[in-house]
Length: 114
Image (tube, rainbow, N blue to C red; front, top):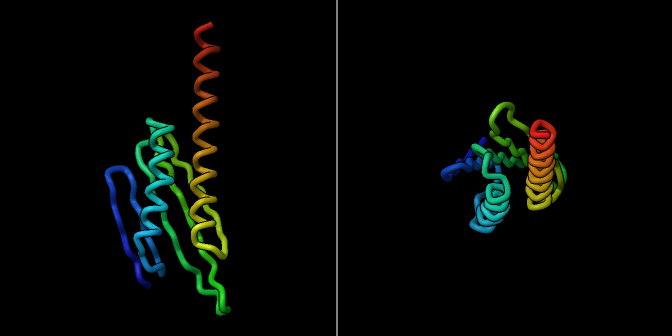
């Protein structure tokens, strides 16, 4: 099994049975940069991308995003036949969950202050 790891200051990317190209890494970096910009309390983000051999002409790709948050971490996993679709879906769901979490914290603060 071929594992390739890349690490940024807050982002850790692991590719398993996927050939690392600059297009893939730039795509992941662009998506994660937006997440960090919108949610500054995020401690880190781990992105794991695996190619699952199916024995057919098409492969399945699994993208797992792990949000390292204060308190509990959140893990999002999406599968697709397209590599970029799996990555985009998992990071989009992560972004939505963080927006919802931020909204809940704002509501709780308002209720306490009243």
